[in-house]
Every structure is written in C-alpha cells, then in structure tokens.
Length: 255
Ligand SMILES: Cc1cc2nc3c(=O)[nH]c(=O)nc-3n(C[C@H](O)[C@H](O)[C@H](O)COP(=O)(O)OP(=O)(O)OC[C@H]3O[C@@H](n4cnc5c(N)ncnc54)[C@H](O)[C@@H]3O)c2cc1C
Image (cartoon, rainbow, N blue to C red; front, side, top):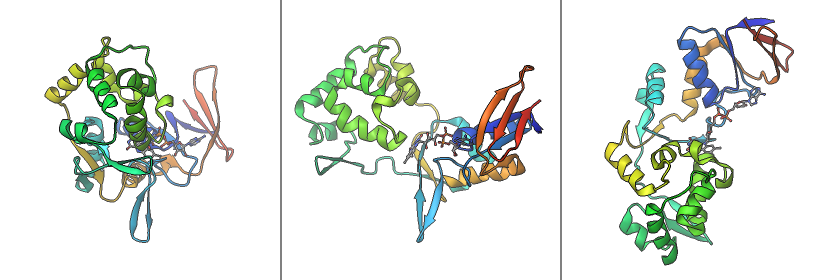
C-alpha cells in the first residue's frame, strides 16, 4: 500500500488543476490517470506539421485563476491573443451563415427568420424562470426554438462537445445564470457585464497547443503523476481514510 495525503483520479484539466494547487500548498498528492498522456480531452497532437487540438483550443481571459496557473508554469510567453471578431460560420440546411458580430449584422443576417429575430429582441427583456435548468429550456423559453436550434446548439456543441438538453445552465454559463438572478431578465445582465467587465477580456490560445498546459503540470508533478494507471475502485476506511485501487493492483491510501 502506498501512502499520501490526497489522491486525484484523472489528469484532465480538472484533476491537473486540483493536483497543482494541492502540490503548491505542500500537500503530498498522487494523481492516477488511465490514459498514456495527461490532459484528458485538452490535449494536442502534431500531424504532418499541423497542430491538432483534440479538445478546447482557446480560453477566455476572465479567469484570474487560469492566468495565475499559466504564470506559475512559466507559460505566459506561449499565450497568444486571438482575434475575437474573426468570422465564424454556422452550417444550416447546407448553407454557411456568418455568425452576426453586432446588432446591425444580426438584423441583416439570413441565419434566422424575421419572426425569430423579433423573438430574440423580446426575449432579452422578458422575465424567465429559475426552473429552466437545462441550457435548451433556458434559451428556448426566452428566445424561441429556432434561435436555440440555429445558434445555441452549434455554439454549445463547439464549446462543450455536448448538446444543450444535457447541459445545466447554472454550470455551463454561471455568470449569465447568476447575473440574470431571480427575475431571469437577460438585458440588464448583458448591460451590467458590458459596464463592469472584470478580468482580462478576449480569447487566447497557447502557441504550442493546450497539451503544453498538461505537460507543464505533469512535469511539475513528476513521479506524483502515474500514467496508464486506471482506477478500478475507491473505498472509504472506518477512520475516514480513502483506499484507491488501481487496475495494476497497486493501492493508494490517504493517511
Ligand atoms: C472538441 C472539444 C472542444 C472543446 N472545447 C472547449 C472549449 O472551447 N472550452 C471549454 O471550456 N471546454 C471545451 N471542451 C470541453 C473540455 O475539454 C472539458 O470540459 C474538459 O476537458 C473537462 O475536464 P475534466 O478534467 O473534467 O475531464 P476530462 O478532460 O474528460 O479528463 C478526465 C480524465 O480522467 C481520466 N479518467 C477517467 N476515468 C478514469 C479512471 N477510472 N482512472 C483514472 N483516470 C480516469 C481520463 O482518461 C481523462 O484523462 C471541449 C471538448 C471537446 C471534446
């Protein structure tokens, strides 16, 4: 049996961030990862000279915690600001539509029918309900089915690689959820966020790919990270300690 203060299962972004902050606080942490590389879905591959991101390829600048992590890992020189206004397209019924960049663009766009556009404008002012838990319900109640299907579904598909019916609004869009509060009105929230901002604005990428982040945390963790070590069971002892069993037969125990 191997002893440590904490065991983290999975070396995806969540596990690596947790392990890095535990290790920085002087806690003896062991990370067990099933795959042969760290990073989980946030990983990069090189192919014929191209950089391929297997998951996310950009991050938003609002999170001070992420900037702190990048600084501690000495990755600030790798950060590249992306052009947030670069054209993005949605494929709908065999046609590519440019995602509108502002109010005028929105009204000129052929992405939505005129009825749906007015529903969006009205939805910005309309009260919603805190009972709308999924992203699909929340968006559809305010802005209608057409907007949800044509704009929100492709957007959340690109961000979360999931669908809007399976995503919880409070967790997927925590700021919008908190700011709209009990009234559920979107317009005051949008105006508030435009005036207060907070954090660095914009969208950023890492020149060498997201895998750099995982590799940097992995190298900091050194022998505390075990790759190709899938966890098969977790048991809680009568004294509250955890016994984490790996498929290799090793057991990691917290004190
Ligand atoms: C194409 C794509 C694009 C994306 N774009 C964005 C984006 O733009 N912005 C954004 O915020 N998010 C994006 N995401 C989502 C983002 O990748 C995930 O939210 C993030 O990876 C979740 O991190 P995680 O650590 O919780 O899980 P994961 O990344 O899934 O990592 C979990 C880790 O746990 C390991 N594991 C699982 N079971 C065991 C076990 N029994 N024992 C040991 N290890 C185990 C897995 O091997 C894996 O390494 C995207 C995802 C995809 C696929």
